[in-house]
Amino acid sequence: LFNPEHIFSSSGGKLFADGRKTTQSLSDLINSVCGSGDAANFTGGLCGYAGFNYAASVEGVKLHKSVFPDAEYGFFTECLVFDNFEKTCVYNGREDKDFDAFFEKIMAAGIAESLPENKLECIGKGFHYSKQGFEELVLKAKAFLYSGDVFQLVVSNKYFFDFKGDLFSAYRELRKNNPSPYHYFLKFGERIVAGASPENFCSIRSKRVYTY
Image (cartoon, rainbow, N blue to C red):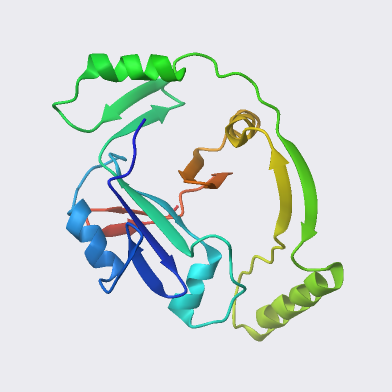
């Protein structure tokens, strides 16, 4: 329904705006298109992700190269906000929008109707680390904890697989079986990032950062 007006991405310490390399900082780019809104709830703006590999450009550490950009955000001026608790849907965007044509587009896309089920078939390709390699990571993590360098660590092992079918159907099942307050399904061309979280990592309101 809505396409981003701009796409910002970062890979290997380089910043790109709409596919072109730029020397501007990410904060300058964001301010140039987003301004300094003071909305209490989500009203559009940047939607995207910052992956684990983004730490390489911030902390100067060496990480394994990812097939995804380190960070990628789309800037949206229109959005539909679904509230599962209140069972409502609110449109945020332009005041001059032709709502009759807009809702006809929704109906034509089938969004207002039940989407057909499309099973997802996955073929496992294996883990990034072997069992021995992962156990070595756990031992290193314990050493950091005992020495007091860190107080919390998340040790993970990336799993690769090929799939056939519709990823959005799998996302709908995730949303149904894991009713977390925060869900996301982000599509950047052929790249898709989806998941669920019980917590909001952080939000910014009136130049204050909240995490809970």
